[in-house]
Length: 429
Ligand code: CMC
Image 1 (tube, protein in one colour):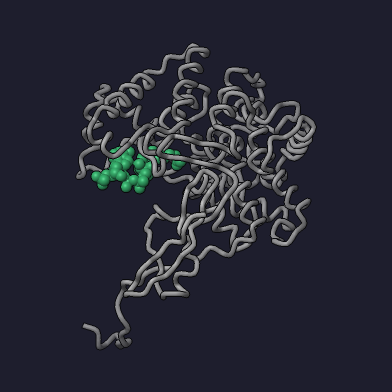
Image 2 (cartoon, rainbow, N blue to C red):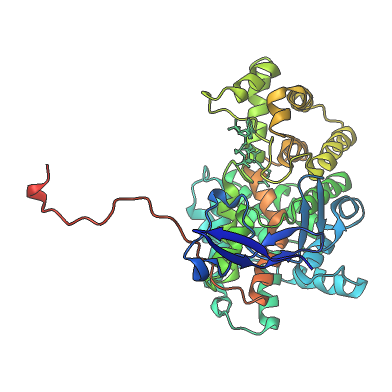
């Protein structure tokens, strides 16, 4: 049994319970600290704050370990499928064959979105960023399924909402792309698997039906698995925080999409490929960009490098780097940007600045090159991340609801003006 932590404040000692996780991670539980002492803790960016206890994902940033429900990410990426992983994350165990078939069939039954939603797409300009469209349409599902607003529904009903969002998200995402290129939207075809269906909706034309290529399907399935959950990151914490007010699942997921969109989070995959293209167009001088990234007067950062938690290597990046080589070889594509990415990684990993700060390539560094090789346009990259992260968001939201977690409401230390009296406008200097 771990000892309680002892904290001395203004000469008075307080005992605080220590919480220990499955892998011996330790936390000091400060829930009662303010009641006992009047103090709160301060932690900008939540760099050292555990927001919850969770049974979903284990991440050890020092040793580059990532496991979903105890299963190593390497095994899941190699041997599992995205839907199997989605089931695992959401329901806690790997499905039996019949459970997986039922899950898959239910999802296939709900892939259509309400025909009226098509009008939303017609109203967006073709230059609209698909993340804005996807987040808005996802939130709009709550208006078409108002029963989802009731926070006290039986689990059977909540499961239907979960099935709907999993089933409709690929349609919502692919339609955002169809719209962005001024093409008619493609309806889902339920003969296809989850990933095949998404690719069909993305790439079929009225003139020619897209035939899913198994190399592309496997690569995408793997990418989605690698993105499926990552414990309490910015977007997932957003989903839990928004959901903690008993906001509905569709709205909570839409909020997660927005949090993911930023270039420091899921938006990095788009930023990486734009950066690599820029380096390529600028003559491929990798060292110049490494120097720019180190220059504190230059806002430029090496996108796809660094991670809040991984301080050794990102296990997802290792798998993706290999998948990237495989996919490009199998598809017979030579992308000069892959050579630049590898060179950049090599140079940065030997540079003192990056070594000292433990900055390594993250999941986003190579994923964009695969997306591009399989024909996905750059501004859809973050949408792909969202498609992958969806089961994780759902699982984390479900866990938060099941645990009956209280509404999230951080505190602050106020540093503004002390009390002062109102001055009439005529008397202000
Ligand atoms: N290029 C250059 N310098 C960097 C970079 C980078 N990509 N990342 C961090 N640093 C430096 C930073 O300037 C700081 O230096 P100093 O100590 O001298 O001030 C130090 O490293 C620590 O950085 P930080 O910003 O305090 O670290 P953080 O934990 O707050 O940020 C991060 C993590 C991922 C936001 C950051 O590394 C970054 O901006 N990376 C580029 C964007 C990116 O690739 N994001 C995707 C993350 S993985 C996908 C996901 O899960 O969202």
